[in-house]
Length: 336
Image (cartoon, rainbow, N blue to C red; front, side, top):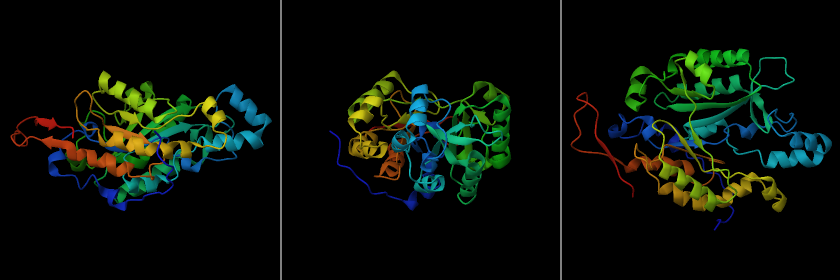
């Protein structure tokens, strides 16, 4: 049963440096075996209501938007916005996985790249990368995963431009993919950024790029169906490295027609009480049914980020593990 609509936004600045506050017993565990909060479609807080519909949307959506913009455009905006906090506010709230859907406008002769979710953002990618860097410089022990995805309209030349920007902005903060990313290792080398890149050919050319991170997307309109999907994925077994369990609901045409005055926000907020229960039952680790990154919409609402961070308290390094430097530590994970 869906919960009552909640509209409050909780900004917990205590989570701004939560990684640096983790106990030393967790410093040698790979980040892909910890619990990390993420935001789905991170940049939709700044979608441009006047922009063209993105190139990868259906011909029907483009046609309707062209014929009836006064009706269709408000609907698109209501169902495209998934976040209201800025990227800096999300990082400050404790989010450590940023979902960057990157695109180039077909009619734009410049090299400017934008974020996209049905429509394009008002900001360009380069400016947001600088904003992330600025935040990292004041939080030297925090690590952020940037998942670069979508790439609608990107040519080989534009990929080269984007990757060059990433390298020039983050420089030695970029963690190479041949490193096992534990907090201790990241801190020792000054690494703070892991960039996953959803274009295999480009990943092969650059050691600073990590392969695309799998995202468990349920494509469901109800909380019950979404949880069933996530439990099925867990039974099939988690990937060996980073992956995302998405607790974001997804509308379809039928749902929108049945809920003419609804929005993705109302859809999401009603689901939070049930999803909170599911999140709190999870546990991180390398075992088959463990989670890693949990990403959601409207992450400033409820206690989502705090709940995901607190899952790390379920990790119990055994007291009789070998001393540091004598080999791989034996770690046990318990669900409670």
